[in-house]
Image (cartoon, rainbow, N blue to C red; front, side):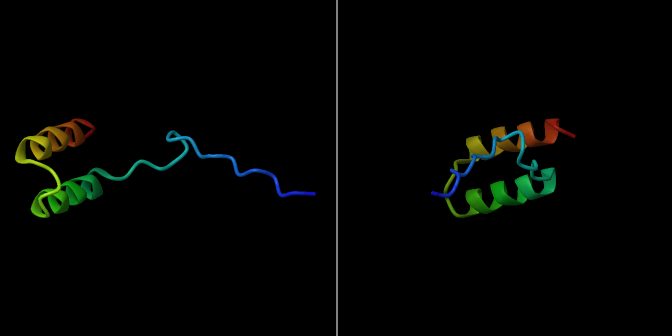
Length: 51
């Protein structure tokens, strides 16, 4: 008998990263040139609104 297919986890089931970890990830992405200042500011504001 074949193994049962894996059930994908929904985003709601995954734990939400802390605001601090979100901000650290944003800072790293901005420092590495992966996102613009405008994107950084927008995402940072959104993360802080969750407090």
